[in-house]
Length: 192
Ligand SMILES: [Zn+2]
Image 1 (cartoon, rainbow, N blue to C red):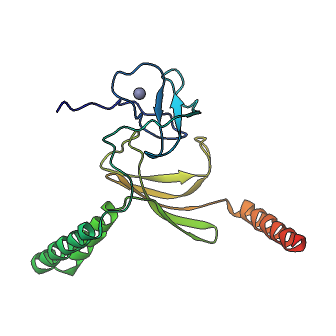
Image 2 (cartoon, rainbow, N blue to C red):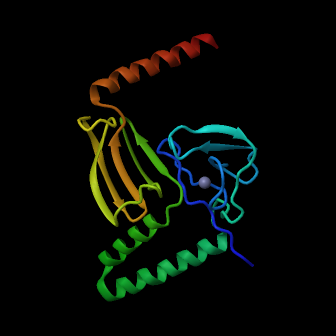
Image 3 (cartoon, rainbow, N blue to C red):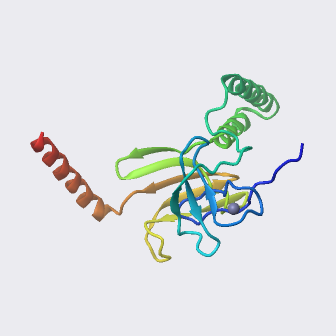
């Protein structure tokens, strides 16, 4: 069977998706978020960020279905991890095993996870394929896209996974944001 190749173009930064048409297709690039979705995003090489939504499903037939891995797979994964961890413990002690466990768990992340604590948020997520990162990177996160925006936290990239701890808003804006939220909640309550 002849294997059909997929178009290798990715959309611009705003919505980061790979074209789901066949390689060397005519016209604009396009992709649907799932195989049964009746619409697709389309974009052209001229302007990667100008994305339009059009009717019709565009889905590459060999795209693996996104979703959780099977239970058997996860059990095998955990058994393999436990055995490897035990091996590390036996050879180099508990610290080495703990580091191994941390990295193995981190690299098995497939969907973003975030936890908010007051003004701060911490999370792990997969780095966009299009901006594929170096093996290890470390840097500050900022409040805005401008180069002189204030630093808001730290980000570590390890392989395809990024760890981030940062503030959602600067301290002076946070008080404002809280009071506006409280106002809105009060109004909603009054309307009920
Ligand atoms: Zn394409």
